Length: 124
Image (cartoon, rainbow, N blue to C red; front, side, top):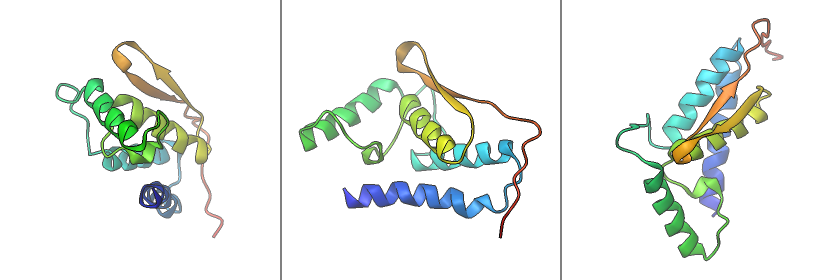
């Protein structure tokens, strides 16, 4: 479990390290999206990867730990839901206005409100 927590901390640290060179919200959104994608196996092939394959991984972890509650960092790969939840959490952490939307077939996505006048200034 310690290893999975470290993994999530590494994701956060990766974004923090790039934060100094980011000057706009759209750039920060792109960095977060790329980090989430890389963490969960790269770009999602929507024709090959389904929500049911994610369900199998979740069920296996639940059986292993004998719990229906598992940290999201336990997942090695992630489909729509997992990526959307992690993206939302990271946007919240970095102060980006973001919502988590859901639809049919266990699809989930994010909507980010980009403020055109928002600029980031480094305080270093």
